[in-house]
Image 1 (cartoon, rainbow over the protein chains, first blue to last red):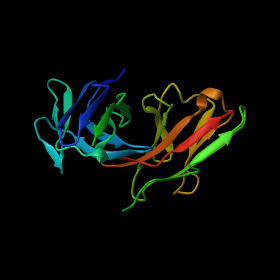
Image 2 (cartoon, one colour):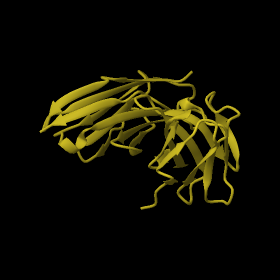
Image 3 (tube, each protein chain N blue to C red):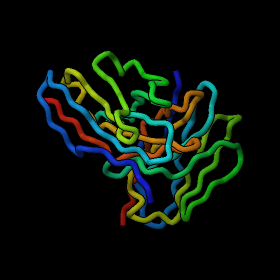
Length: 110
Length: 111
């Protein structure tokens, strides 16, 4: 069975801090790893990673994948209160279905 | 920007009743999915659908569940006889390439 483990489960930071979220996985026939941000309802797509060592960036968010060690990190720099959300890591296996981790709840305090 | 839409946003039903959750995927996408998220728990895969048939389903997706794409645009999830434990947020997703985009969800409450 595919397994996705995120850490930490939750964290609280102050505006301007940098956060690093971790995702480790075990999946059959890995195809891709995706990061989503979930605020009140639907997960919103952030990144898709398929190759090791290539950093993806979008504004203050960046992510990288290590396919040898089977993990990914998501970094958020200069955090803002609007970054408060649950960040979900999901891994796509050979059949394209996504297996999700439990998420990391990030709370950014002003 | 095109997006996945879902209706209704909230459905309340009595145990044993049938419900149909509706989704309109992004128009040029070929793969469609249903996921659910029970309150406080992780998002769980239910079923994937491609070329007008189910390509994979999880153990959650038992005989009470069915999906169809009746008219080439809508994608529906039917639960034949709802149980209390079916109460959850149900998300539809559609995919192009390897990126899955999620709809806003339908919150199903079974009383």
